[in-house]
Image (cartoon, rainbow, N blue to C red; front, top):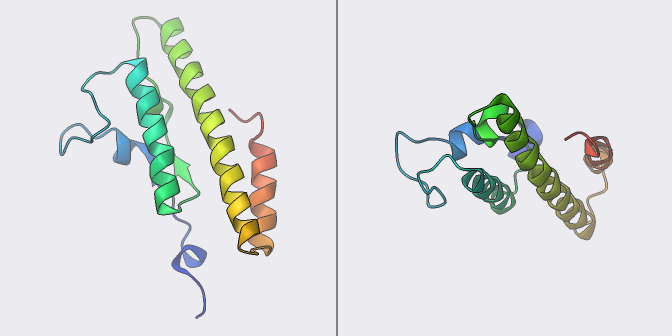
Length: 125
């Protein structure tokens, strides 16, 4: 039909299934802890993975990306810190993706929507 698979099906990467599985094969970025440093390592691995696959979507639940702590305040602080990193990485990721699409001359409706999504994501996290 002349379309790529990604034009027919909108792929995304589910953070939980890709980066939080602990009952099976161990991932090379996992150190076995539930630390804030490990949460940040997972987030960086997520965006590296997205870039390598060429996937421009991902999804998560709050407990997927940040670690629980002893108190609700500490748990919220962990989430805030990881969200700040995700926002930084996502901004870089979308900038790189838009640059690539412009480089290859992709300027259809998807490019417009992509730019619109980027603008809307500013301040989302």
